[in-house]
Image 1 (cartoon, rainbow, N blue to C red):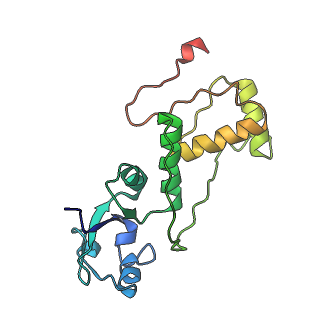
Image 2 (cartoon, rainbow, N blue to C red):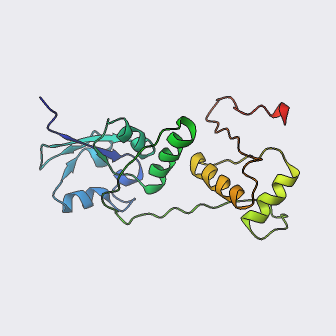
Image 3 (cartoon, helix red, strand yellow):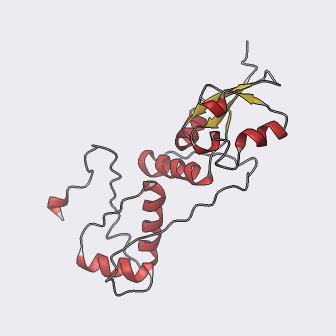
Length: 184
């Protein structure tokens, strides 16, 4: 017998807090999907419908879970969705196709780069061009490494340096580098 419940990824964290994140609980209630437990950190249950199953989790992982068909639908930010799509493409040469059903028009993430104050350039392109003349490896630290990597690679492409700096290594906690810099 087929599963008769729709598994919905419910983002833990700020969206679960009624005073932060645009109040997802109220949004669902106004749409006719009253929840219980979600706002207090307990498993989400839907009080008015029996066909929804709440899967409380990290929105950072929802793209992967959707691709693996662990979830049917999820509530997550575009930034985290794009981060996982890029990770699958760049690390595993796997294309994930996800469809945005409905924007909630909340949040708004900007990619911001921070460099030393004594850097004598005005644009990202000029900065990376200068950096690639001085260094063999570019190191970037980011909460969303694949978004940052994609941005750096696109900028390197614009200044015709991507072929020279095509290798990359996204290192997560205690993972080894994939680039042997003794050869560089």
